[in-house]
Image (cartoon, rainbow, N blue to C red; front, side):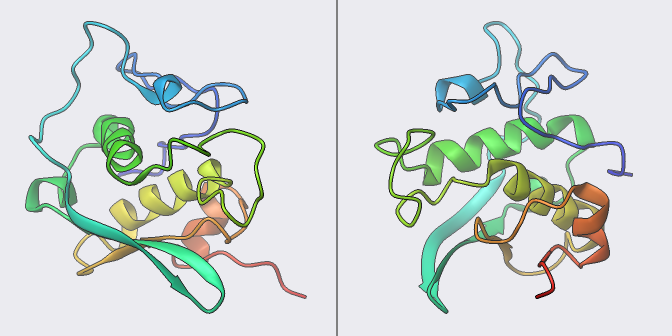
Length: 151
C-alpha cells in the first residue's frame, strides 16, 4: 500500500506537492505549491509533543482517525502539518548545534512516518525519532519503524 511512497529530500509527489527541497531546508520548502490542495483530512494529527528520554528527542504523535487512514498521496500533507505544528523554526534546516536541531534527520523521520502508516497505523502513538539513522524506507519497515545501526 505505502511501499511506493519513499519521500526523501528533493522529491515531488505525484500530486505535485513538494515534499522537501535541497539543503538548506526551510519550513517554506515543505509547503504545497500555490493552488495545490491535496489534503483530504481537516487535520492529520490530534496531538503531539517533543519528549526527551534516554538522552534523545522523540516526537510523540497521536494521529486523528482520518490521519490514520490516509492514502499514500496524502503523506506529504501529513508531514507538512507535523512540521508546522512541531517544527523548530529558529533552528529548522540551519547549521546549528546538532543536539538542538530536532529536525536534523528529516529523511529518516519521513521514512518512520511512512512506516507507521504502512505497518502500525492503529498503534495509539507514533514516535518520530531524529536520532535514528536514515537507512532507507525498506530497512525502516524491516526494523518495525525503529532503525538502528549495529555496533
